[in-house]
Image (cartoon, rainbow, N blue to C red; front, side):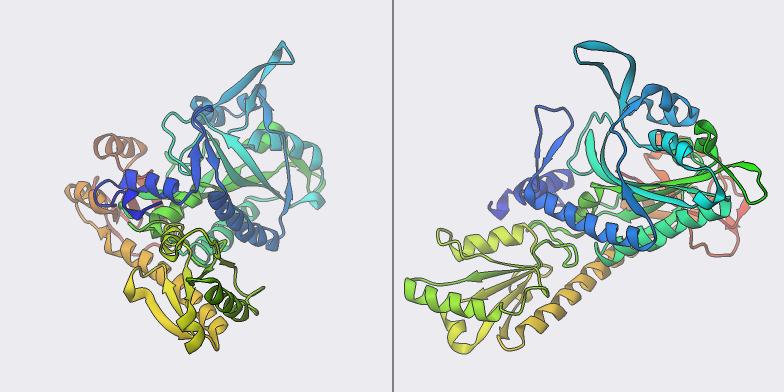
Amino acid sequence: MPKETITPRQQDYSQWYLDIVQNADMADYAEVVRGCIVFKPTGYAIWEAIQRGLDDRIKATGHVNAYFPLLIPRSFLMKEAEHIEGFAPEVAEVTRAGGEDLAEPYVIRPTSETIIGHFYAKWVRSWRDLPLLINQWANVMRWEMRPRPFLRTAEFLWQEGHTVHATEADAERETLMILHDVYGDFMERDMAVPVIKGLKTEREKFAGGLRSYSLEAMMQDYRALQSGTSHNLGQNFARAFNITFTDQQNTIQYAWTTSWGVSTRLIGAMIMVHSDDEGLVVPPRLAPVQVVVVPIYKNDTERSSVLQAVEQVTADWAGRLRFKVDDRPNLTPGFKYNEWELKGIPVRVELGPRDVQQQNVAVARRDIPGREGKQIVPQAGLTAYLETLLTTIQQVLYDRALRFREDHTYTIQRFDELADAVERGFARCYWAGSSEDEQRIQSDLKATIRVIPLEQPGTAGTCILTGKETTQQVIFGRAY
């Protein structure tokens, strides 16, 4: 697709995002199924890379994967009052099957705490069974009225971890470990997306949970995207589903549970943090294809010598670089350059007859479009050069995104500064207001407290609304 089909970010950010998704061939609207999308191979390959990066980290922390039913008896959701209240507007039900009305409707899972709680109550008997550490890769459905690919769709893909512990302290350690060591590490190292980790307010926490933590990232339109959540559920679901165990003193205790998840929303985060008006930008650690090689030739003689040189320079790439040789004969080099730039491939290597003679290649970086990002590099030592370059690009993307967030985060002292700050980014301030105060601000300014950052200044200040002295700072922002 030609680049001019992408609307510039400054002109219309929402349309720019949709143009990237469509023109980079990542997804299509499933117009026959309301609110859903089709993950095209380019988009699904990125999701597979996200899965691998997260799954390796999840398993490294002692968790194992399992799978639970898609359909949940409606009565299960009714057992935890806050939970059903929080999800009721998004629930889709199956009321008829096999040509008959069902005695009890099934809910298509909006999340799996209830169905998993039912089975955990069967599996947990003794303190020796704990901790129980299980993760599920699945799809969920939440009836979304205004879908946007990857960000909000009626059906989406995710992982959801559900664990059981003997004490609140154990559950809290699990919740924070997932936040830091799994989600935070993956998002910053693999996605090159800087995140603010923090506690959700009582008003914003997970329905039915004790404490909720999230990771918030800033998009290029200055809005926040909640990129992952980790919840200490306390004993609420254990009491609702009778998840009990016999402790070492032979006393029956209610367990403490957690749940945590990230979804295909991470693809949307990657697009909005890194991409530009030329198209998609994919960080090297996440890219299904890190290097594309474009052979250049005009006739069969040149083709033979160029392809032979390509085979030589790529001979030791297997296992070191994820690469593709684009030798499609029916397309011009210029078309190929544009296509791979649009799809966000981190590095492009061009090799033509002159390069064969001079033992060079041209290397173009996706993170620096145009001539500034292109260099002539010797074929000798090319593999090591590309490995180093990919590492450099990964760091450049992270540093660029971090600098953008820092440049658009404003520390404010007065309430009358809040509206302007959230229009231009994040507002960091002291806060001692109530849930009702939060609701009023959301109604008036369309801004919410994204998180209470885990990193606090340790010194007292004055709440911007109430004037009370407090040591707590929060991040306000407008969000997706």
